[in-house]
Image (cartoon, rainbow, N blue to C red; front, side, top):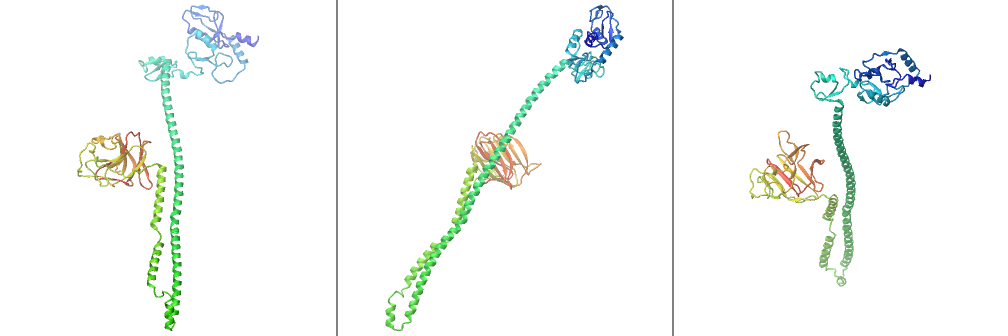
Length: 528
């Protein structure tokens, strides 16, 4: 008999595979011992049938192992080639056929072909193909995990559900719990995905900002490098002009002096000639000859000539002059002014000139100096009129504000006492807690406020939010820089080197006025 024919004779009609521990029924048909046992386990009592001929039995038949058939099947299996394969394969196929599902009750992976025969006979729980189902069984009762205890968040079997540990707990079918948990995790995943996308957008935004800042920094470096080269060029040209001016004036004076000396040499020669002529006349002893010769020229009339020569000489000496040091200094001053004008126009930063304090809005205990530059906290109430524009607290605003452009101004503070400097809208309250700069959304300031913890550090305030800076105060001069369109207000400590303290960022909607607050005999002076 051919191998293929023998295979057909040795195949179980239930699992469609070579017999494993075959048994024979009363009707003469053969089946794997496990296959017929599991088949009858799921049939109704008093209704047992033969899967092959469908003969009915009123009682469950006793099965008898077919030893001869078992030996033939084992001998046939030994003649078949063995293959080493990876993966999960059907238990009942002779060759490596990938399993479609694994039956939890049978603990057997099966292909689609055997799965259809299996499903016609029993209704078991099927899972994804696996060779080991240990993880799907209860470690205590060795039964299939069918439920999920929501209180203990544990997968349990039917015995676990009925014993004391989980009795009375809220449980769900494993598949239902799986669906709920999966749906919940999908919802969480959706949120996390959305959050990660938002983080990605923020990172991208920050990267774009970083790139913009880097590009801007490169542009600013190139711009200022070009500006410094232009300044150096102008300074070099100014240096040449200033250093060449003394030499130019020197040459001019020396030329005039040389001309004057040459004229004096001519006059000296003329005088020498006259002196020699007079000496010769004085040697004549004959009176008639002497007088006749002496009257031929105005040898004796020298007073008028001396006066005229002196006056002309004095005028020529005056015309010679001296080095004009003031003119040299003027060249330097004008040149430097032109360079500063060029630099100011290039960097487009306006230094406000003449920022003055408005005494009409200063608090009753704020003394304003006559030049309207200094504010001092006074223990004596100032003699001033009461108006709606006047602050009740110890602070003051400038007379004018800024509604565009870039501006900077400086203040000098006293070495002790509390103070705040900054900028605010003119619509700021004039009395109450909201009137103090830094304690409302209409003002931004830097200050020093003494406390028990640290009195040598700066604080910045806006809308009642206080930030203690880590910079120790090292000097008493502060620069305030405003870029109105960019919405930036920055504070710098004017030391060596200059140190950036803090920058506020906002969208300004009103003109900004300089604002000062002083306490405890403190003085703040606007520079410039």
